[in-house]
Every structure is written in structure tokens, then in C-alpha cells.
Length: 236
Image (tube, helix red, strand yellow):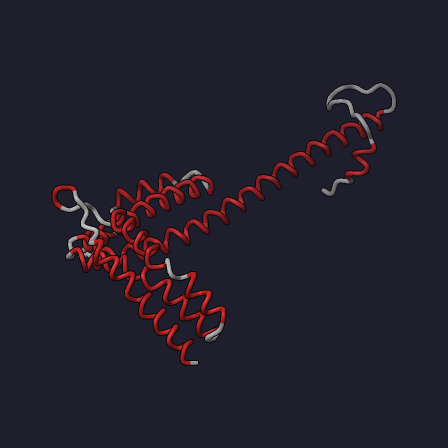
């Protein structure tokens, strides 16, 4: 039934349904009609609000499902590389029954379960990352620390080469050379801190940061690139 809301609004206050209205019986019937129409309109509005909220929950659950599924696929591949058997990665019937029970409350319950699954998946990613770093931590100190010092040492020289390729041997390149002089020291400082954060201490609780090797690693690329650019500028 289509409700003329303007007609309902213009009718003004209406006696409650079931209350006798003295006078014309048509007026009493009209009052009952308006009361029923307003009640129906309220139900319709509540239903529309509930449907919209449910649609938003369903959309959020689909997004969570896509994210969790992507993480699980990546983790399954990494776990197989670590030697975990495929049968160990499949859920058992009791686990499936528990998951089904936890999601039997409708879209809101499904969304809550998926958010919990995402948090567990993030924790598993952190555990796998820590396991990967622990493997590298058993390498010789120089080889292990090179993974940290090396990339940091190349940032400044690579940026300087980009500036030189774009600007040529002009004032901009010379300014970049001057600004980049502290870059090796900055790279060494960041590498020194990162080695302590990424790798556990060795025997005796002491971390071997190989400072001389790290300083040399950070200095050599900068010296080679700066010297080459300066020579190119002098010869041009």
C-alpha cells in the first residue's frame, strides 16, 4: 500500500487506535486509518534502515574475506617452503564445526569471525618474518650485516646519479654532491641501529654490529660515485 505522507502529516494529532471519537463515524475510521498508516510507515523505515545496515555488514565481510584469503594463500606457500606437510595445513572437522558455529549468528557474526581471523593471520605473518630473520641471524656477522648496511649505503649514491642524469654537470649536481656528503654517516647510523633491531644478540648477550665493516660499506659507494661525478664535471 502506498502512503500519502503529506496527507498523514497534514492530519495533525490523531487519537490512539481503539479510542472512541465522538461525532461522525467517518472521522473515527479516518483516525484509525492514519494511525495504521503511521505505524506502517515506521515499520517500513525501520526495515529500510536494517536492510541498509545489513548490506554494509555484508560488504565489509566480503572485503575481510578477500584480505584473509590472500594472506592465507601466501602463508600456505611459505609454510610449505619451510617443510610443513599439506595435510597439516588443512582444517580438521572439529575446527570446521567450531568455525561454522561461530558464524551462525548472521552477517555480523561472520564479520566478527573474519576480523578475528585477520588478526590471527597478521600474527602468523609476524611469526614467519621473525623466523626468517632468525635464520639470517645464524649467518656470519659480516654477511648478515651486509644485508642491512648495503641497501642503506646505496640510497645516497643512487639519488646522486639520478640528479646527475637529469641535470647534467651543472650547479644543481654540484649542490647535490655537497648535500650528499653526510649521506654515508647517516646510512651507517641507520644501519647500526637496524642491525640491533633486526637480529638477536649473540653468545654473551652482545651484538656484533661490525662497525668498521659497516662504515666501509657505507663509505665506498659514496666515494666512488662522488669522485666519478666530480671528474665528469671537471672534464666537461
